Length: 156
Image (cartoon, rainbow, N blue to C red):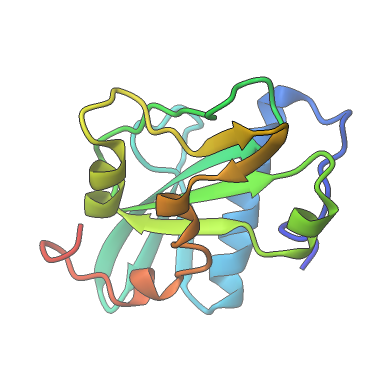
């Protein structure tokens, strides 16, 4: 799959990184035969994509980051109006990451647990010059089944 198995071009404008991640998630959901819709507005607060699954509306928030950006923890403000968060991690120079899937799928409860009392969700760490996705998030790589298993009120 091209969108989630490639190195990001250094020339890509920063304002397109989020759009790139949303399209990658949208494409992956379509590939898995979900009924999928994108938000009508780019400034829709709380969710970017809606999935209809078994007559349930599941709001998905997509956050995209470049692993090697200048931030040491790639933190995000997570809005409240979503059910599932998909973190898309792109790489400028990590050939190994570019060969792997880099979608991290978490329920709202899982995100709240990882975030704790912090205002922002930290997603990566840097040690010895190597950037990695934090363990609590990396455990959720490609857990697309969370969308299929989602039940309103149970694991949101």
